[in-house]
Length: 432
Ligand code: DLL
Image 1: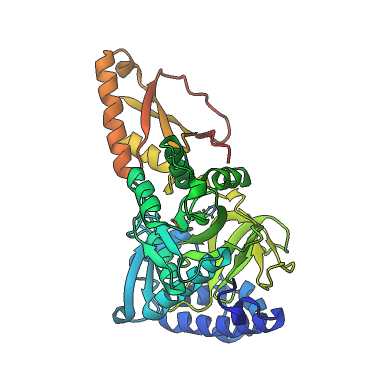
Image 2: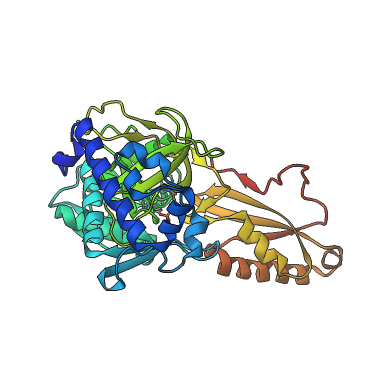
């Protein structure tokens, strides 16, 4: 079902015109109200009056995550704090988190784009949405919540975790839709099957999964086990949270809600915009957001775009499911983890070297992180008890820094392979 036919099926010419008008207005606004952007535009020698259509976007400078962090917490606000009614942040495990502040209209917009997302799979009034995305500063929980309520469905705000209770609720309340990360959906499926649940007999019909990479293979597995249709949904905190792009019933590429979030694909090395069909880094400009508008935000996500017409009748540009990242960020059980964070923790611990490797595997459909760290000679010659104690200590410190549990294995000095070029810190065995 198309939630908002006026905008979702708008003829492309009209859409491009609308984007141009919205861009002009947001550029003027950030120039007037956000010193961060004014300084950047001045340095690049562009004035708001230079922006007359969406094609002029390429004249504006990019915004990076590091720049956003530098102005933490409120440096990107484009309205008085009195107009903000909700605040979310990215997980912030690599330093200061990025802040997304929403005005009342932004929260409404969020509900709208998530209503579009859920409608694409068929959710309507009368549906029961079991929302197992985490509630809190993470945008998954509340984003899906607003969308479900917006379409008039009943939302069960169960949040993530407690699988037994998830399965009880699914059965007892007759959930028809499930929203969570794809790995958790699969985990739930297997737990249910081993409990003897016959998912074919439950009313569950569809699932909306995102926040981490997954593959078509994983989709088939989820669909087969849970007896549902599984849709890929995409978004990021810096832009609004979930509700930036989503799959329609064709389950082939994600429609970008480009009347609100304008996507570009750029060459990650040069910043040059790339044509449709070419892989590159995804950048977004928010065209209507009031609280914290963002201009040409570099996501570091890799994908490509296509403007070929879709059978569903929507006219928006579509993006391929994510193909990777320009950096080495890992997403473990929905939490973003960088090797550099591990390194930082290790530098503060006695008895170990900063020679380490991250081994990621998927066991029972859950991501498991093992951190292998080299001991120095003196720790190596110590008793086993001391070494095991050290492992637990590092695990504890890593949990504090990464917000996700890892298993630490101390290995012999000089046993981790050295490289002459870039160190290979990550061994990702999840076949996704
Ligand atoms: O993950 C927002 C979200 C919540 C999206 C619920 C979908 C569902 P962040 O925590 O800021 O926000 O992480 C954003 O996660 O840049 C991608 O690298 C990755 N990501 C998000 N959706 C997908 C997806 C939320 N469908 C980062 N496939 C993004 C692959 C995804 N990666």
